Length: 87
Image (cartoon, rainbow, N blue to C red; front, side):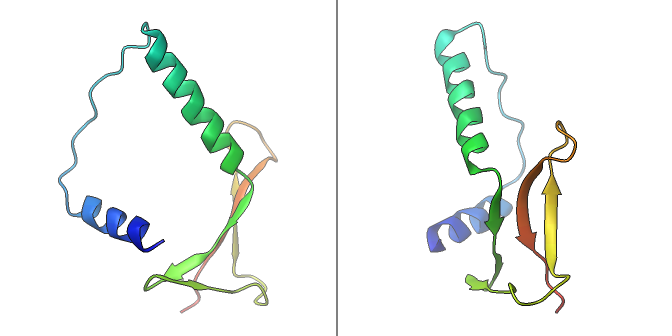
């Protein structure tokens, strides 16, 4: 978890650059994209914690502090649940 936070913090300080175009006529690029989509699909529907200062904050007992992420491509399909802060 700490490494992920460090990675996000370091990327936030890096100037934005567009990624180069990917040539999907190449089999390895198509395969990599499909694998990435399957990875994301396997992670949908989870509950994502609120993280403040690198610590997970539990809000399970606080009604009204949940955010529900809906799938844009499939109406009514929840893609995840997250926490919001009332601080």
